[in-house]
Amino acid sequence: MGDRRRGNTVYRRVYGLVDRKRLLEERWPTYLQFDPVFHRELQQVPVDRVIRHYVPSACLRELNIQRTLDAVQACAVELVDELKAATSLPDRSFGISGSVLVGLHSDSSDIDPVVYGREASIRVREALETLLNGHGCFLRYDAKSIEILYESRSMSGSMSLRDFARHERRKVFEGKYRGRDYFVRCVKEWDETSEKYGDRQFYPEGRSSIAAVICDASESILTPCRYEIRNVKVTDGPREKVPSSIVSFRGRFCEQAFEGERISARGELE
Image (cartoon, rainbow, N blue to C red; front, side, top):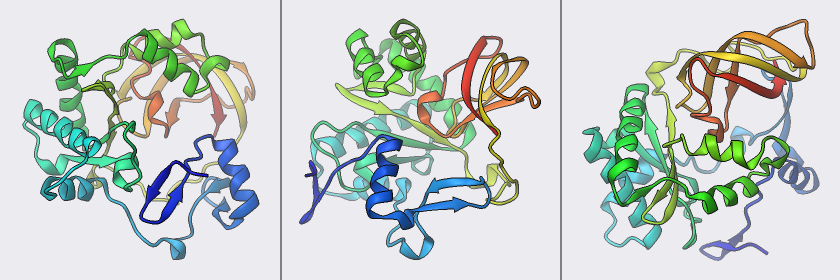
């Protein structure tokens, strides 16, 4: 039984990738397809099964003209208003994603703002650095919040709580706003990228563990985030091909490392 409701339909969120795949295999296998570009099975919705396209920027516009907002919606709008005031960016630079976007938020839901554009993302990051250091509505995660985050992300197999806390405390795109969790996603504008699906092919080469030095973290604030690396040493996995960059589509790895830092990483070599 689910804990979210929209109209007469009850929903339950399935967060873990393994759990999600198992559910799709059992009930909706058509949403598991071999992708000809990434050369692996991916969870994806066929275009002819798409009923509605949810757009974060449109969601924010709708919330701004609604006469009545619940507590979560109002908090989301207020957060974006504060970022707009601190950056002088226009409305079009922002959106609202997450459960608020699809109308499935609860009283305890977090806020997921979206920032459009590389330059806008830099300005929002600079503003949050200031707001988190001197504005009562924005707060960094405290020790208890970080511990909860550590457990919810099942990070015990990847790094110690101490190392996890050290990384999370450096981040500004996540924290608390008026006591509610927020997580900012920054994405490029359409005119900032020319690559289209299928322009390049990706082939899995197996799991790899490396040690390296970050030489360019300019896209670490974006989703997907990218870290250019040098002085790479493969510590486990295929050794014939040495990676030149680390890329992740998961927002949790944004702001993870900075230029000049020596890092260790584990993931799929492509």
